[in-house]
Image (cartoon, rainbow, N blue to C red):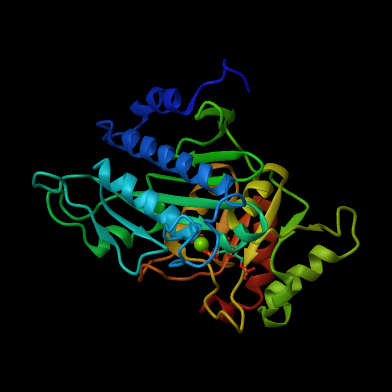
Length: 340
Ligand code: AHM
Ligand code: MG
């Protein structure tokens, strides 16, 4: 990845005319996300050095209020989107309700809303393990010029115009789609520039990695238990390998490169699953499908699930198409579990 590779800025400009309604607004939105991601990346990378860890509300030695990194990341994304005046509303895992962004000097005529999980897997921060940011972009459905409404956010995943994630790993990468394939950019922290390092990313059709919190095994639905038994059986290409970081973004990213399936099912402890439909599952599902993979709730495509609340949870099966379809075969034997 040298200077010859395209930068994210160049890539966004080059591909701007792919969008039917483009007036450069989506490009500006992506540019602001790339800026916020850079700021968060810088902060995440020095997490072990500064007094930023610890509970929100604590005072550090400099007398500054300590912030947990998830709150910090939320502030950075919210501030960037608000200050740059490019969206009409934002919803975040960190906020109870969606936030209306009013255009300065009157008027509310922006087209897009953003939903985000600004720092996913944040319990991994304290132990220096990768975390991520997830984002999802929709065109509003309410008339331009009015205030955004809940309906602008409660759209099916199929309606997404862009989605992406940032993985703060051994290096920081931004991976996104606007419905024309998936491209990954790696941050050169010395220059603050994102380079196209992973053009046209694709899930291998099959894989050998399964990622699930097996500690919850006894609480899983029978279809998931049966599928796990299948993964562990001695056959020509099995048993598979179990890999679970506990950061959706990182587990997904590895599985997209190597081939694998990530599952967060319903359980007797979490009857609707744990992950959130709107700002965790749908964006990852859009990326998965654009990369030739599959994302479902065990029975139907995640992006066809009708949203009814902002923080709605769903079971999530995502990864290499053949692996997800195989897991769905096992789930189909227990149709009652589709009603979570
Ligand atoms: P969070 O949004 O509170 O960070 O939770 C989401 C995370 C995912 O990144 C990860 O895959 C999962 O929760 C891990 O959950 P568990 O510890 O139950 O296995
Ligand atoms: Mg999360």
